[in-house]
Length: 273
Length: 125
Image (tube, rainbow over all chains, first blue to last red; front, side):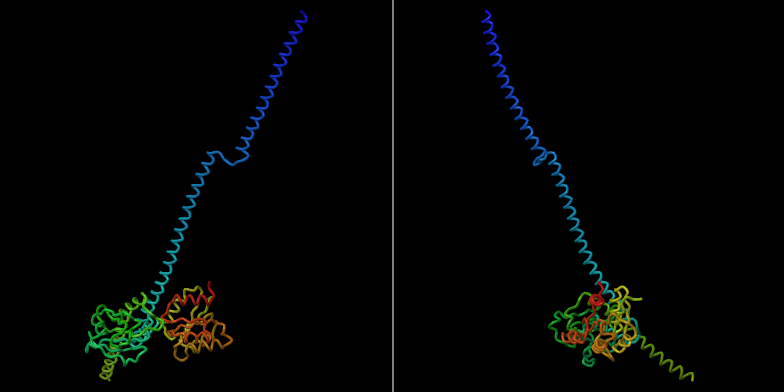
């Protein structure tokens, strides 16, 4: 009985030991699995935090939006710079234009001022001559005045040619006569191939007081460096047409009145002696 | 007290006025006018000049003679000279430059050109 009991206890002990052993093995398996999972977890954490290759999607979205905003802002700034540069170029071009205009106005002003600075007929003709040489750039030209009694235009001044070479022209005859009769300027179409012809100048400008023509300016040759007329030249021609005519007319009137006054004074002196 | 003294030698009063008007854009400029070469030399001896602008065709003494005399005078030979003339031929330009002119401008007058040349010779930036 006692042996039976001892055998039973021993069997139970072995059975218990086997169960315990299996439990120990299972526990060890669990511990290994736990360690593996912890290692895996650590790997994942590292890949998300320490590695930084792939930031969270929200962050990525925010950054993308910010980049787009900055790109747009940059484009706007570039457009503005381009616009300002264009404006700047416009201003520079405008400045040059105004500078030119200013110079041209100064030329016109000085020419006009000089024309009306004297009442001496010869001086007026000299000033007109200076303006035509220095401002227009003509080398050969003549000023012809209309004699209203004979209806003939006669040269009163010439530059680069002898005055005696310029023939008298009847009103309405040829280019000069037509300009004097119509009051319209004449410009030869082809300056380069123009051959000097005293009856048909390359440029003929009427000298007018309102619509009344008192004479013409006839140009036969330009200075060699003057190839064509600029816009300011046409303005000068317009100025000459009016102001030179007025200056010539006034100075002639003044000379006539001076002469008459002198004659009358002579008579008075004779009568009162 | 002016910064730049400029002498204009030209027989035409209209031209003198036009040149003077162009040069007056330079701040501190003072302009003295002479009717011909002799008058120019007389004015040159009375004060210091920084620039001379001269015509060629003038009575009494022409511009080329003036250029030659100025360049051969130790007192004035360093003064820059600009010739402004109707003579547009290359040989006229070369003759003036050979005599000692620093620049050569042909008429009809262009104020901008005169101003540019004057600024360069007066070393104004």
